[in-house]
Image 1 (cartoon, helix red, strand yellow):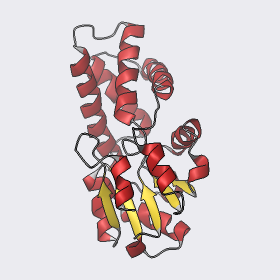
Image 2: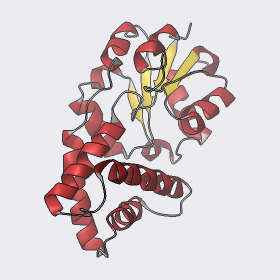
Image 3: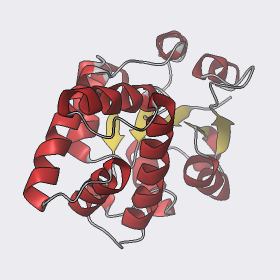
Image 4: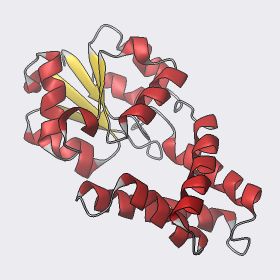
Length: 215
């Protein structure tokens, strides 16, 4: 059994895709954007473009601000100035934060593993990650929230995991990494010797609730 846990945040504990879907639809209604695109197609486009740009940001090809502006321009097919895009994304973020919720089974999992030291390891921007943890009343349940702002590396770079492991002071072979992304969360954790659990809330037996069996 593991002596400690590392956990991803978005779509592992927090329903990030659900919050994004709610926010982008509310933004479209508020601003009257892209009325010709069906709701489900708009959600899929926002998600796919976002994931593509997050990879580009991880490779140093775009900044956080550039990926946000580009995402809005591509999804809503608008010629936006940087200032207009920044204002529009601020509205999106307000809707997004209002929609943050724990995934079903997350609280049950956290209560059942309360005896283990735990650290969140996320690629999210540090201030936003801390706001998520605070709003969801998770701060007292974790030793730390580790982001690229802490160590200059993004998952799947092993340095972000090594930073978290140093905070734990526990051999990686005695640590369980829990996340929804095989490439970013699980593969690098396995390479460092950690045990892993793949969270997939669309698959039987793979929700965060079921991670308790691995811990």
